Amino acid sequence: MTFPGRPVPGNQHDREIHENLEAWKRKPLLREVYRDFHRLLARYVAQDREAVTLELGSGIGSIKETLPDCMTSDMFPNPWLDRLENAYALSWGAGTVTNLILFDVWHHLQYPGTALKEFARVLRPRGRLLLLDPDMGLLGRVIYGLLHHEPLGCGGRIAWNAPNDFDPKDAPYFAAQASAHRIFYRRENTGWMRDWSLVHLQRMASLTYVASGGFRGPQLYPARLLPYVRMLDGAFSHWPKMFATRILIVLERKAEEPTPATMS
Image (cartoon, rainbow, N blue to C red; front, side, top):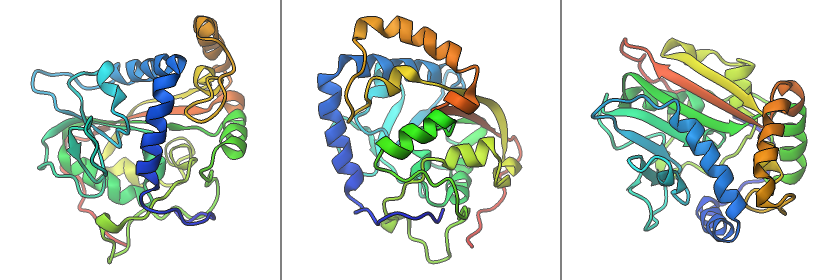
């Protein structure tokens, strides 16, 4: 996508991982909120005896607390990760992966169409792609627009495919927090529908996360009130245009062979 915003060094992501790890250690509430997110994702993974589940952009690797068999990966080596992976050039063979999970990763993909072709290549027929990303209800736009360092990217052209000279190893740090909302909810680009079926789309208030302060903000409620904030989440999520701050998208790869990748 082409959005305004200053360039960010490529190693910014690795620095953020280590900053997040420190916040994770000192915020028990944040750890419990993330377990809720991971339990939600776990409900939609495709199950079988030989299922291979891979998370891209695992960061601190906390998903293993809920999905212990999930392989974790990122673009930078860290001792708690299982693999190094680049979303545009995965190391897996065709049809070898059952589930791909991207939690707060989709909005970092500058060329979503190119990434989706690679995901379709490695996923088996009817394998699943699970995306959990920021959503752009009114509250989401306010929270992410005013209190988050990454650009929203609510306007501008969606650069669906990478240019011919694109090298995945040299992909710069990129962020456009509205990407999942624009593509899968507003359907500003429907190119993904050739290879994928939409299994589930859920827009959530996620007040438990927003009021926890996340990794960088102040915590606005004590951990003992988490059950009550969860109930508020359920109520406020009935009005996603006003309160949605998170979106869950579950896609299933169609049984037929994916269309060949193209560059443009």
